[in-house]
Amino acid sequence: MPHMKQDYDLPDTSEAMKDLAREMVSRIENGQLGHAVALVDRMNDVREQTLYQEIGRLTRALHEAIKNLNIESVGAGSEIHSATDKLAYVIEMTDKSANRTMDLVDASMPLASVINERAAELQMRWQRFLNKELRPDEFRVLTRDIGEFLGQSADQSRQLQNQLSEIVLAQDFQDLTGQVIQRVGKLVRDVESRLVNLVVMAGTIDSITGVSHRGFSELDSESDLAEEIDAIAAEGPQINPDCEGVVASQDDVDDLLSSLGF
Amino acid sequence: MNKNMKILIVDDFSTMRRIVKNLLRDLGFTNTAEADDGSTALPMLQQGDFDFLVTDWNMPGMTGIDLLRKVRADERLRHLPVLMVTAEAKREQIVAAAQAGVNGYVVKPFTAAVLKEKIEKIFERVEG
Image 1 (cartoon, rainbow over the protein chains, first blue to last red):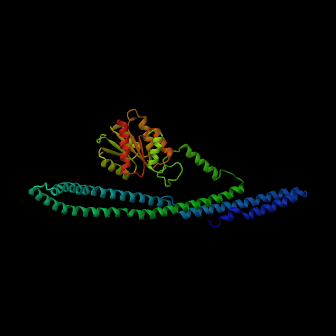
Image 2 (cartoon, rainbow over the protein chains, first blue to last red; image 1 turned 45 degrees about the horizontal axis):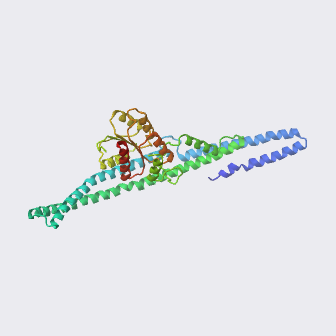
C-alpha cells in the first residue's frame, strides 16, 4: 500500500483544525464572540474541502482498482472471469486425469489377476511334480503350459508396465493446475489488498464526516454469529487438521461416534 | 450380507462416484446406481428398492445431511442404512450426522479397508 499512510493521517487537516480551534479559544477568552463564531464557519470550510478531496481520492482509487482488475467489462475478458475459467480448467484437468488413471487401472486389473491365477495354478502342479506325483503325460502337459505361461506373462507384464507408466503420465495435471491455482491465488490476494486500501480510504471519510458505523471487529463478531447459527454448513475439505473442532483422522471420527453410542 | 443389494451412490463429482463404485465392486457389490445430489437421489430412493445409501455431504442442490434427514422422515425409507462419505470433518458436523441418524461416517480421503470395515459394521448391526 504506497501513498495510503498520508491519506489516513490527514496531517494538514488536523493542523488547520488545531490552529483554528486555538484561535477560537483565545477569541472567546478575549470576549470576541463574533470572531469566534466566524471561525466555526472556517472550520466547516476546512472540513468540507478535505471531504471533497478525500471523496475525490477515494473515487480515483476505486476507479484505479477497477481498472487494474479489468472488471470494468463485466463478464468475458475480465480478470475475475478468466480466473473462473482457469478454475474450471483445473476441474476439467483433474477430472480427466482421474478418469484416465481409473481407466488404466481397470485395464490393468484383469491382466494382474490372470497372471496371478495362472501362476497359482501352475505352482500347484509344479509342487506335485516336485513331490514326484506327476505322471509322464501330465508332466508333458505341464511343461507345455509353463512355456505358454512364460510367453503370456512376458506379454502381459509388458502391457502392465506400459499402463503403469501411462498412469504416471496422467499425473502431469498437478504441474499445470498448480500453476493455474497459484495465479488465481495471486489474483485473490491482489483483490484483497485493493479492497483493504478502499476500506482505509473510506475510513478517512468517515472520520471527517464524523460518521461511525460498524467496524471490522463488529463485522467479525457478526460472521461468528452466522457461523453459530449454521455450525454444520458444508465447508469442504479441512486444509488444516490442527484446527479446533476438526477431526484429524478416521480414528477420531470412530472415537467420536463410539462416544455417542455408535 | 447380501452382495446383490441395491446401492445408491450420491456425490456431485463423477470421479468420486466412480471410485466408490469401483471399491464397492471390488468388495463384491455390483448392483449400484448413481445420483449427483440429494434432490436427484431422493426420488430415485422413493421409486427404487434401494438397500443401502452412500452419500457425500457437500453437494449443490440438496446436501447429504438434508438428504439423510429426508430419508429418515420418509415412512418407507426411514430404516434405509446410510453411510456418509465426506470431506466434512468438524466434530459438530459428525455429531449432527449422528443425530440425524447416519449409520456410518467416513472422512475423505479414505482407504478401501476403511470403506469395507464401515460397510460390514453397518450390516452387522442392521442384520444382527
